[in-house]
Image (cartoon, rainbow, N blue to C red; front, top):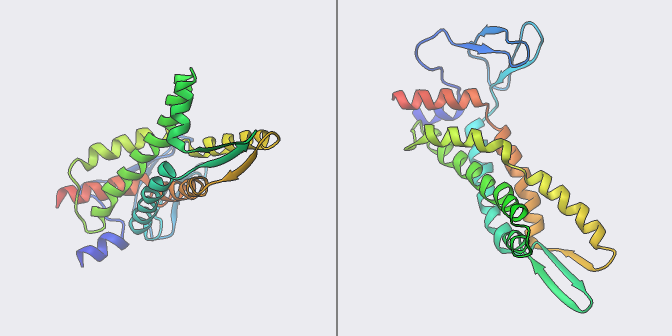
Length: 217
């Protein structure tokens, strides 16, 4: 019964009353439990305060685990195959960052590594590490610390921006070389979808409430 309740319901921490502040108009509300699949809106401006998303822990754990598996493919499989002037080149995502550093643009190379490799790994790995035990009502060691770092790293997860930049660059390179998308490219596209789905699967307020409840058990 403990496992089922941990998966299906949004537990309410002890104490209270609990408050929610609108991020748009700063109106203070009494944060009461809401039904699964519904949302709480500001009484003044109508902005969303928080949402009780269906099967949140199952979805965030599934999507984050899938993202981690796709990262293995992204970091090892060819991203793009290029044929130009009789030369064949295969490029991987870590190889692209390393090539930028070797070509005299270390800041750009480090930025690619940080925003498309390290930050997504921290975010997806942290979500799985924190949320998988929460499905059974348990608190992973250091879960509070990991959750804080996830919140800090989320704005720096820029795989969508990188993918858009790659597409623009490939459109220009396509005029002078034969380009073929490798398995790594399609895995990267799937990674982008899974990362967005994992982050959107659970409300931050619900995540912190579940951590507080698991901590008190």
